[in-house]
Amino acid sequence: MIVLFAPPPMEGARPSKRPRTSDADSEQDSKFWYQDGNIILQAGQKRFKVHMGVLSRQSAVFRDMFAMPPSREENEGNEDDNCHVVVLQDSPQDLEILLTLLYDTLSIYKRQHQSKLPLPTVAAMLRMGRKYSFKHLRTQGLSYLKEQYPDALFSFDLWCPSYGQSTEGLAEVIAMGHENSLLDVLLPAYWKLLIYCDAKGIVKFFDEMDPSLKACLRFPEPITSLLGRERIRSLAFETTLSFLSEKKIPVKSCTGAKRKQCQQTVDDIQLECLQSDSTVTLKYALQPYYGYKRDFDKKFCDLCYGVLKETHSTGRSQLWSQFTEAFGISKNQNIWVEEDWASDAE
Ligand SMILES: [Zn+2]
Image (tube, rainbow, N blue to C red; front, side, top):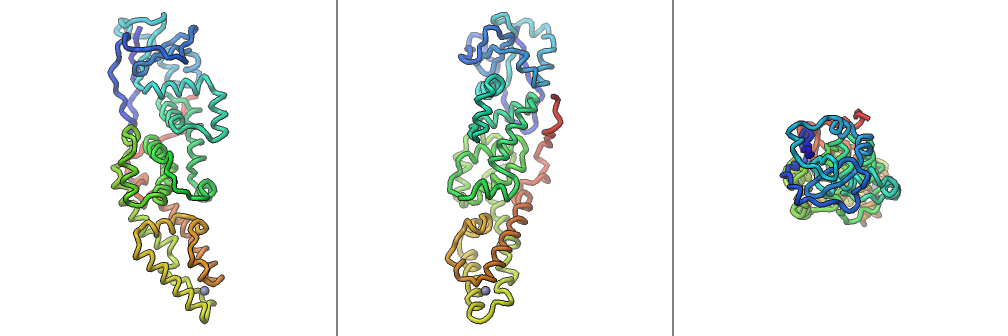
């Protein structure tokens, strides 16, 4: 018999309405077709013959689904291989990843251990874990993502010390952050976007984003990022770059010819920030001080340089803590689904 299963819609989730395919169109998956399986799951045109016990052991949603006797209307469908067929509204890829995670645990944990989980796997862990209450998958997916995109500035700097120019995987991570309301992940992801992309680059980044990822975004892009970028730029002058406006440099004990040179260097930096595109200011403000070596470092006396580094470091922590709100992705926008990641049915 055929059971068309549609779990309650998740707010903010990607719509996955797909008309049920006729049995004639569907094909057996080559990997997940166990002769002793006792349930057939269908996603799109793919059918997977698996075991109810494997699914319901970890998922309360599957457990309830299998416990429910099919209605008379559902009984009118066909049987396949003497098994019930459950049609899910997920993509075949997501379902295949889910089954791989449930059946082939060793290879997944090996890859996770080596920090080599492909991002589509992480996305499916979060998406399917959330939809079908696989607490373990959600927690693992989230912890893997947070390892790559930590929400603490200190860890972020350790993870990204070289600040290379690659935005590889960033679109997937931003989409996952939106889809699963992970503001903690969006912070480092957007921070990285501002370091790597100028205004033109941001437009290109979202233009080239895969439509399936773009569908996850909760607010219009690139406009939110472009406006956020400008707000972060002005906030930088109150935090990371506050030494420019607060007359902290030259320090009192810096005197004579040295004082003149330190003052001149502050003026030069100020002029550079004013004259150039925001990208220069943002790179200077968002990267750790050691990540942005400039000739003018050598022009400061030791005393002034110490104050500069201290101000930059303290200010950068302040900027980090104010980032999500200033950038325009804070909780106040009321668009994020409050997720309780910890309290799931076992
Ligand atoms: Zn000085």
